[in-house]
Every structure is written in structure tokens, then in C-alpha cells.
Length: 265
Ligand SMILES: C[S@@+](CC[C@H](N)C(=O)[O-])C[C@H]1O[C@@H](n2cnc3c(N)ncnc32)[C@H](O)[C@@H]1O
Image 1 (cartoon, rainbow, N blue to C red):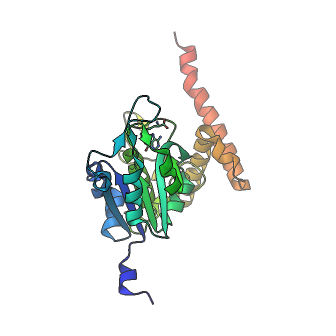
Image 2: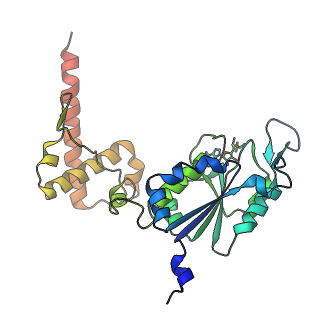
Image 3: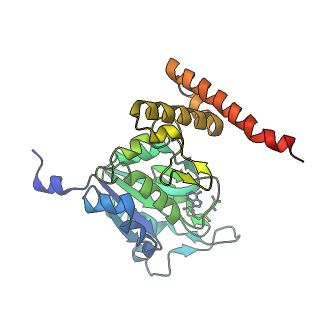
């Protein structure tokens, strides 16, 4: 049987090493992150990098070899890592040169016990820090001014997979990527907005038909926007039929939309 201290332990603990702990103040109070923290499944600790430096000013220095920008020194970062590291820790450095964050990696991280996130700043971190890093993560092919926005992206995406973080726990199961497809289009009230109507089937109350429509739209959307996702899947015969039907309806709708313009003045 688990002891009291084990029971109280959060399922996932995340330590964030940053020069700007205040950056995280509001996002920790919102949405799935807040709910997971309140339910005790997530614990987030902010480690102020300056408090691990010999003096608050000694967190960065000029790059050897010259050139623009300052480089984060290795000592404070490694001290910060070592202050919280355990055999269960996974140390992640945010970097535009890292592995691109995706759905599978997010779920993998949500299943870990302890993440240590390092937010770089300025020109980046001293190369030697990489010896203490298990994984480098990028959130896309562009350069941010610091790792903090990347840490928030990871935190939010991971929190969605922790117990008790979502208002409706099944919501994540129908979101894009989890089904292997993009999510189907969504509608809410009013039934008509500026001449645009909600598809009749969604208001029919026929749940089997609604499920079929959603699957069909999800297949079509994925084919049109992210064909790469479909390439990795074997579609059932039913899915193939739905996709064929959706394509025909799409082509029909597109030709109807362009006809008046072609016939116009
Ligand atoms: C200005 S960037 C440094 C870029 C670095 N000189 C390079 O070109 O690879 C400062 C910090 O922002 C973070 N960062 C920038 N772009 C990122 C991205 N796409 N994904 C994750 N972190 C990023 C990293 O922590 C990085 O150390």
C-alpha cells in the first residue's frame, strides 16, 4: 500500500529554470494547468536562474570568439538542475535546434514523473550545458527571444493529459491528432449567422448520423490540410467510403460556389 507521502505526491512535477519566473504567474492560474495543480496531479516550481549565480548579475557573459549577443553561463544552469534532479528527472532544454514538439511527445512527457525545463535567453546557453540535458525541444521553425513561451506551450499541452485537468475528460480524446485525424468542424448557436447555416445533421438529434458526419468531415479536413497524417494510417473500408463521399460533396460544393462568379459580369 502507498504511504501518505506517496499518495500526496503529484503525478507530474515540473521545475522550470528561468530568468523570468514572473512570466509564468498568470498562465499557472488558467485552464487545465490551474485545474491540474488544484487537483494535485501537477506541481510546478519556478527556479530563478539568478539565485543560482555567484551574484545576480553573473548569469550571462560575452561569447568566446566574439560576435553579437550574450550567452547564458553554464554554472548557474547546472547548479539549478542539480538542485532538483532525481533518477526520475528528464531534463529538457528549449532550443530552435531541438526535436519539434508534437502530439506523441506531449503524451510521452505527460506520462513522466519529473520534468526539468531550461529556458534559454539572449543568444542561447553555453554548449557545455548540453551534457546535463536529456532532450532538446523546439516548438517550431522560428526563433523566440527566450524559452519561456515554449515552456508555456509544453506545460499547457502536457497538462491536458493529466487526470482532472479538463472540464470534460473525454474532450482531448476527440481533438486533432489523438484520433490520427484533424478534428471535425465545430458549430454552436445561433443556428444561422449572417446567412451561414449550421449543417442540418448536427441539429437532428440523430447521434449515429452526427458521428458519421463528424468522421467524414474529419477525414476530408485531414486529407485537404494534412495529407501526411493520412499517409501513416490504414483506413477501414467504411472510412474509405466516407472519404470518397466527402470528396464528391466537396467538389460539388466548390463547383457550385465558383459558378456564379464565372457567369458574372
Ligand atoms: C534567441 S534564442 C537563441 C537562438 C540560437 N542562437 C539559435 O539560433 O539556435 C534564445 C532562446 O530562446 C529559446 N528558443 C528560441 N526559439 C525557440 C524555439 N523555436 N523553440 C524552443 N525554444 C526556443 C531557446 O531557449 C533559446 O536558447
